[in-house]
Length: 453
Image 1: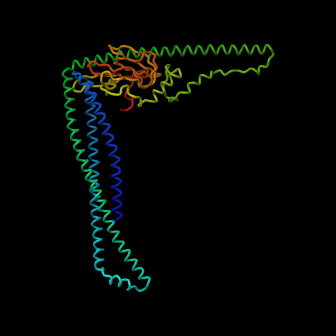
Image 2: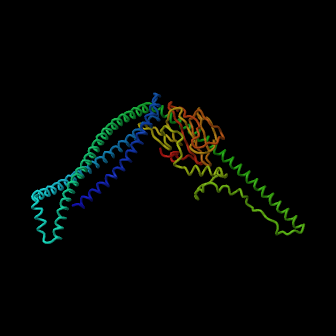
Image 3: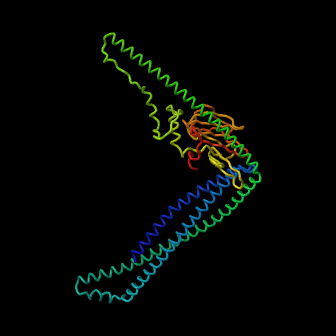
């Protein structure tokens, strides 16, 4: 019986410990989601000043609904955890009550036995009826141990009652927490309905002006095409410049090698004509020592594709550094959310579709835009009345468009976090900026390079 009780107790304790760990994870997730929802609400409140409904607003509302759903799922997990804790607490209380009843019953039997044998005559008679002195000593020890046993019974009963009281308090605490969690669940469900109504309103208004949205999409794609063409020109220019420098460096090295060989030959001829010992002539190595400087960079993968933009140690180091931080690069903005993702996309409630070479981030007008990695500014130019900046990172290029108040110029060396400018207003009047990443041959998904938010 005791072994069975101990096994059940340890199993329940293990489950409760696991539930405690899960509680910490659940609460941490809820805090993260609530923080994201607060940021979304803050961004939406700034964007709503523009009465014109936009794709950016729709994207923010959709993300808020998704985050709210995740929060409700997390609350449901918390409720399941509390239900499990309440169930386990109730089981333990029931078993402790049964154990307490057994202890009380045994103690009552002990009291009855002691009452029946309460007279000193019975006590002395029990001792003096011993057959030997050793038997009498054993009987005295038995009576003492019996008295200690009753005292132990009392202590055990009191401790069990204390454990039951603690378990009841824990049970009540879990029930109270469950009530507050249920109230929070109801609150979030009501807010979720409001979010869905807001989404329906935005979708309805966007659908009512589908032709205007279609024009907005086409204009945006034309701007993207201009940026793409300009970026290709910049890449071609950078490649041509890198080739020119590589060819000039190779030509200079060839001339230096020819001069070195001519000087060596002249020295050998002079030694031979003077009858000197040719063995005393020391030859220099054919490979200049400074060619080993590229070993200071991180060793790239063996299956990696190289191009002329990595012909210098600096270019190689910049490329490897950019590649090494894939998936952990900082975001170009500290606020805002992606309203148009990389690749093809559709507008809910309409037949409109589009394709994006980068990501469009909706955020308040004037928000600070920063570089995501170390590099050099290759170009600063105009695209449909807004400024675009292209930064080279070895063979990689990052582009930041729809900016104003630019603080860098062509040739500026920047670091991750260097302020480039401010986010400008888009076609809808809301603030936005477009971020793109190119590997020199084409665009890649920028979100695969940035760290998770």
